[in-house]
Structure formats: C-alpha cells, structure tokens
Length: 169
Image 1 (tube, one colour):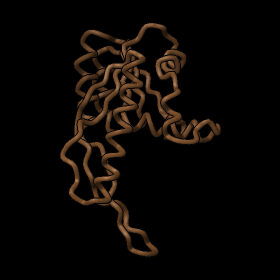
Image 2 (cartoon, rainbow, N blue to C red; image 1 turned 30 degrees about the horizontal axis):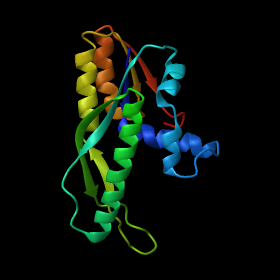
Image 3 (tube, one colour; image 1 turned 90 degrees about the vertical axis):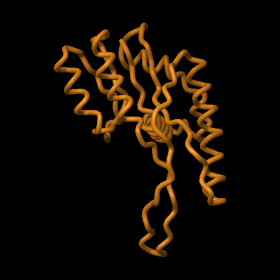
Image 4 (cartoon, rainbow, N blue to C red; image 1 turned 135 degrees about the vertical axis):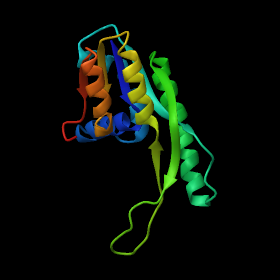
C-alpha cells in the first residue's frame, strides 16, 4: 500500500482538527503528532509506504515583508519535513512555492500577498498513475478535486483507491 500526502493540504486539515479539539496552541504542536501512527489507524494497515508531497523553494521575494514571511515558511518547512522523515515518511519535493496577490479587503482595499504551492498536485497525480502499475492499493490524503482525473485513471487500471479528506471538503 502507498499513501500519498498532499503537503500543505494535509497540514491545514491536521491543524483544523487539532484546533477543533483544542489540542493546537501553535503550529509547532504539529511536531508532536505521530503522523505514521495516525495514518496506519486510518487505513487499517501496519505496512505502508508514505509519501509527503511538498514544494521546492524558488527564489526569495524582494519585498521586505514578504521576505520575513518567506524565511518563516522555510524554517517551518525544514522542521516539519525533518519530523516526517524521522517517522520514515518519504519527502517528495515537487512544484514551487510562489507569492501571489491575495484577496482585496472590502473595507480598506489592502491586498496582502499569499504563498501558494504550484505543481505539487501534478507530480502527485503522475506518481499515482506510475505507481498503479506495481501497487494496486493506493491511499490519497487530500481534499483537492484536481486529483480526481488521476483517480479515475488508476481505478480504470484496477487499483483500489481510498481518499482521506476533511469531512467539510
């Protein structure tokens, strides 16, 4: 069995559940989560290859405020991926992290840039299709509908697919 974790999608789902159960006081509380144990309970197996899909880091922004946020993201990503690697999870760097214009505030008109992953879903989808040649039990932890075409292809190839997602997704 191969389990695919859709990077920041999984992080946000974990944070939301931990917030709702009052177990999250800061993002660093995620570093206490036994991700492998959780996945094994969710999928009901003791033997699984787990792959976490994350971005590679592109060039830093030139804006001073964005640079500070960028450095915070870099530091967090390093801690988080080391935490996952320490549990035996494979880290797959795919796509790039990019700064994009955020939503405009309706009250004041301020627009703050946000960081978005680009390309992670494509790499995950390609790996799903390739891996479905040799492993027919695949689990995807993501709430991203962009993966559905790949899921249809791998199901047509005879793979069994489970999708883990937040109940509100």
